[in-house]
Amino acid sequence: MYKTEVRGPLILGDKNYRQISSDIIAPIDQPIPTWWKAVFGVSMLATLIGVIAIYKTVSEGIGTWGVNNSVGWGWEIINFVWWIGIGHAGTAFSIFLLILRQKWRTSINRAAEAMTVVAVGCAALFPALHMGRVWLAFFIFPYPNTRGSLWVNFNSPLFWDFIAISAYLLISASFWYFGMVPDFATIRDKTTSKIKKAVYGFFAFGWTGSSREWLRYEALSYVLGGIAAVLVVSVHSIVSTDFAVSVIPGWHTTVFPPYFVVGAIFSGFAMVMTLMIIIRKIYKFQDYVTDSHLNAIAKILIFISLIMGTAYSTEIFMAWYSGSQYEMFTFFKNRITGDYTFQFWAMVVCNAFIPQLFWFKKVRQNLTIAFIISLLINVGMWYERFNILITSLSKDYLPSSWVTYSPTWVEIGIYIGTLGMFVAGVLLFFKYIPMIAISEVKSILKVTSLNKNEKTNASHE
Amino acid sequence: MNKNHIIGVFDDEDTLMAALIEAKGKGFKIGEVYTPYPVHEVIEAMGHKTRFTLAAFIYGFLGAAGVLAFMYYTAVIDWPVNYGGKPTNAFPSFIVVTIVITILTVTLASLFTFSWRAKIYPGKAYILPDVRSTDDKFVLIFDKSELAKGEGNIESILRSKGAVEVYEKELEPQI
Image 1 (tube, each protein chain N blue to C red):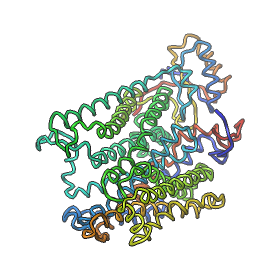
Image 2 (tube, chains in turn red, yellow; image 1 turned 30 degrees about the vertical axis):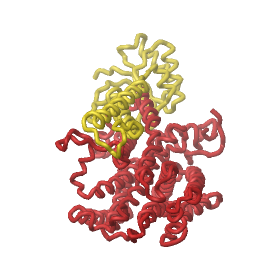
Image 3 (cartoon, rainbow over the protein chains, first blue to last red; image 1 turned 90 degrees about the vertical axis):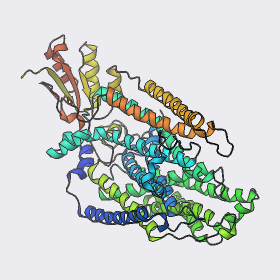
Image 4 (cartoon, one colour; image 1 turned 135 degrees about the horizontal axis):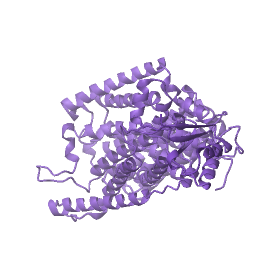
């Protein structure tokens, strides 16, 4: 294996194993800080707004939304796709980087996976509510029933979507959980509180760290890593077929699956950057989430941003090159110019242009600017989904059915609710779960740290 | 109390490995090794093998075959529906569901296999010789009844290879 100095040490400070455990467990042992309570309160308030909006939707029906015959998919599907995109970071980080043996993932994967589980949970809410009669949602399970038995349509992308999202949620949650088992055992054995010992002991499943356990643990993580890597590509490809398989102008293109996958990884990485900057600032994890970690994420974002720009240009080129007047109209008269000019250019500027600022070292090193850019990317990604859905649906083939669409407070309320749920979920993660994979960070201490006992400070491959 | 195990505590994976190789070379049977993180040399030296990948392949194969068979049964045999004149056995569009469910089967079945083989499950009574081994210590244990030669001998080997502590203890499962 060749070694380069590209990344620099991944653990700063003169750490030993004991310090790593203590540093990472510290937030769990400390009393709950005031800012945490305040933000949690606000997120609960937002969740409450969501609950009210959901109650309104379920009790009165989809009529409380702004969707209509032409724009049948509104904010709900925009937000569904947006959350699923954010939820791509977990698999991209932990699994792609695991099989590529990138050691810098060890400080970040836990948080990325936590974010994934919460974001996918938020996303799953939208299609369920969009069914209208959510109490009949079980109809989508293919089980022998008294309606025939009439089975589900296995050819429908909407069914694929249901399978993809539920499988993704289950798999990322279990992958995340089994990664935490050794760390729960560390907390169990280190804590002095009897309650914590009992609770974390229960969740540690009797882990001891014997060589037999590690052998199977490693085997399991590589098997899951190898097989679940497919999910990084498959989940959002399947989401894109919801659109690409239809015959709506602007949707019916073969570029959709890769374009969606790259967009999802883009927004996921941006959200990871947002979260890691917050974690390292608040919990003083600068020694574990180093500048070189953030630098690596920023460089990936530049690259993905270039792909996004290419995808946007490809779509526009194909609209012209295809000679289809409907495609031409959608792209040139309803996106680049026309009623949705702002949303189109917000998407292009936020996703294709602004991340290019990361080419400058000064921008990558200035965490305030990096934080703002990472947020802007997710704003841009929201506008991307808005563009895809609303511009295509509001003006399709028949001018007599052209409409404008604006969301009602119920739709906005559900979105605010999911934002609240996401923040609350992330805060609970900050407080009760080790934010960095303790055992994984320990395993790279020898190869990549400023530890004085080390023969070499060479970085990893 | 019947102190039936000898426990060697190390600060570092290198000293642990040196002691492990030395003890193994002199014919002592090593009970178990506890480390805070996976150390590949230790796993290799202990001679453990796993057929996990084979098991995962079998799960995947059975999962894929099962899902395809299920879709064929429901869509072709049990209740064929004519979607715009397309064939009922719409094989290419069955692939998507097959891939996802195969991944799900492999994941869940592998997790249960792991839980069963590594004996990691809720409420398990576990044996942890030294609680510091999940934090920063590397622990080597020997069962006294299985040591052919004298115990004093093994203690001196462990100490000479850099053990920070060597002591005797009775191991009891705890919950």
